[in-house]
Image (cartoon, rainbow over all chains, first blue to last red; front, side, top):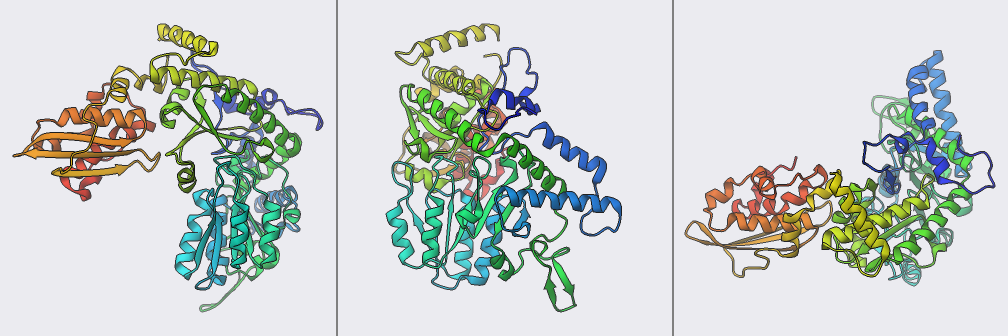
Length: 441
Length: 134
């Protein structure tokens, strides 16, 4: 285990040692991997990878069915993971935590069940201009089906939500308000608690997209008072295919089921069925048991690192990154200037270089970043860009990673323009280093 | 560079990126088509004028990464003066050979966007699927 105390600062270089993929021996001449795309999917510590292997080697059986030892082992581990998750987000009960494939499925579940049962023609559903498509398209679909109206909260030029417009939309009495807690493009931390309280004051149900927040900061659903919170395991050190929909118990109990099949029934007649209690009602079929257990193990690991320390660690790297990136001539940063309003995500443009060209050249330095529209096309339009380049940080990143990124960006500038960027010695040294490595090629 | 995708940023791509051939629009044109790469939003439009059964003039426009814009520029040079039958016969390997530099799987859609647009224009939209982007 990389860390022993909960008071010292997190050291990304030490944490990194727990992640096999970040410690691979690279081919000769290839620099070590700098992974700056955790907002898309995080890497996994050895402990989580081992948990998957151990499960299949020692405990694999279907859950909630077999009256035999292996099935009891599997069921026990699966339900332990659920309790770990409930404590992690401070849910009132583990029954309020539904295992899903990820944030996308969690939001679709709410849209297709709560939405179909409760939205009437003319009802208003509100989301924001900076949502990921997964917190936007599900509402478009159900609104079209139910004849409901859509309203959106614009993004201000500084990357924050237009709260005046939000207040105006609330005066129209929306049935449901859905928004992200942290923007996957801008890193903007929305004032979720206040926005939820305002929505409740007009009787709206609230759906919080926690894909970029739950992995990175302490979350207390009872304090936030959100009605639903969806998040993805694979963005928080856990296996792909693991995720959670939290929902308040009375809402989940009143909702119709999502998918139908095994596990979710109480009694099946030929023409009529009654539903199982929570959470089984929403977990039809055999779930991704090993992945759910892996999520529990990932949360144990995150708890040992400490969510406050993780938040602090990412803030420090973000502050360093913003400082270094601003030094680069022609580089434009997107998102709030006040770093207190920011998670560990930084999107930028470099002159008129296309993000895909930047990302390809960074890849040649073994630096992984995201380039594109980040599944947020309406936000790209609001920013008046086709795409951005995005670096995102997590527990295993260091300021050295940021230095490598900055060097790579100078090289991208030089490569695309056939010259060193002006005035900076860093640009010249990168150009020199590049021509040396070309000699070796 | 000892490895990696930057090998695509050799002279031919950068030359066409900085000094594109046949950039512009033809209005009127005998056929025009435009499309986007949904992955990154790159846009390419190609306008063609035909004299008899030969391409007499071709222009491309759009915006996007160096690979998509340069490969569209290269493509326009390939089709000038060709018959429509010859244009229909241009395959992705022929264009990639003309680019002459290995294009990584992540960027192949960028490199083939212009060809996809040209084929859609010359055949009609329904045949755009003929270009598979493996």
